[in-house]
Amino acid sequence: MLPIPEAKLTLLLLVVSASRNRRIPSCTLVSFVVYLSGMRSRLANKIAIVTGAGSGIGRACAIALAREGARITLVGRRKDRLDNVAREIGDSALVLAADISKRVEIDRMIEHTVAHFGGLNVLLNNAGILHIGSAEQITEEQWDETFNINVRGLWLLSRAVLPHMREAGGGSIINMASVLGINGAHNRAAYAPSKGAVILLTKCMAIDHGQENIRVNAICPAFVETELSAAVFSDAKDPEAVRRERIAAHPIGRLGKPEDIAGLAVYLASDESSWVTGAVFPVDGGYLAV
Ligand code: NAD
Image (cartoon, rainbow, N blue to C red; front, side, top):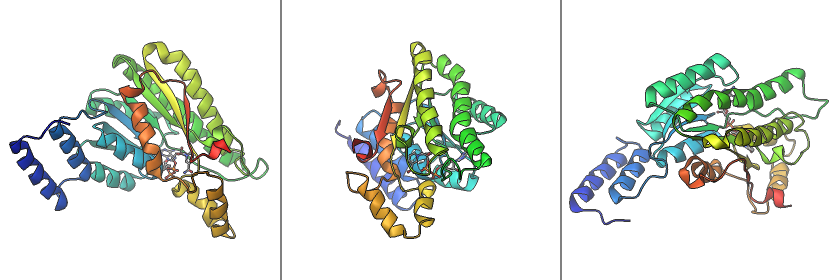
């Protein structure tokens, strides 16, 4: 890190004091410190779309990408949640309430992003849903909804960004799959197959678009505590027993936090991973090692 000259130091102190008074968001402060110190942000000049950005893993990833200098479109169904995340990020975020299972909304979100930021380099396909049940218990509606959002929406978005990534000379698509796209589990008869499909779409798209410098990778979290996974406890007769059982399945000795996933998303969005494509990364506290 380079030494910070006196004038910049004074400016930094002013900005820190404004941040303490909550007049500027902490992400802006971090970017500013990085700028002053002469360090390069890992995602400077990157424009990203993050779906399901209003909560859980998507929120943590969006904040981490913004902290590294990316400008971000926050996509999700609940505008109030997205607005909260945008406030945490600061001026660089664009909020678009949209349903990724609807093609017109996908087209609108991409057009809007490109018009607003002038291009598109990164797509983090994070939005997803979980219906719990065995093959007999899952209804047709639940099966269709799972595949419409987790697979079809992700596929529609991924192909819609390709022309813009080509124009930019390449890009990075990051798909939030799951360890349950690799291994099966009780009562995940719709969810796990949908994540398995995401993993194979990741590999196929990596093969088809590698020569265009469009990289496609998948992240496979194990149990991360979010709204999506909360039903596992809330629906249980003995939530504490279920929690102990779930923790025991992770050799690291704890469940995941959304922030545990964000570091890999930053790496895959950045040029540091420029030779990484078609890869499937568990971030799982050792779950798949057992
Ligand atoms: P979450 O419920 O907090 O996040 C999912 C987000 O997707 C929500 O903000 C939701 O509003 C949004 N979303 C759902 N359907 C949408 C649609 N049609 N259009 C737009 N947005 C939509 O849960 P999370 O755990 O943060 O999940 C994020 C991703 O991580 C999901 O794809 C999930 O399958 C995956 N994942 C989660 C876990 C876990 O244990 N939490 C484990 C493995 C994989």
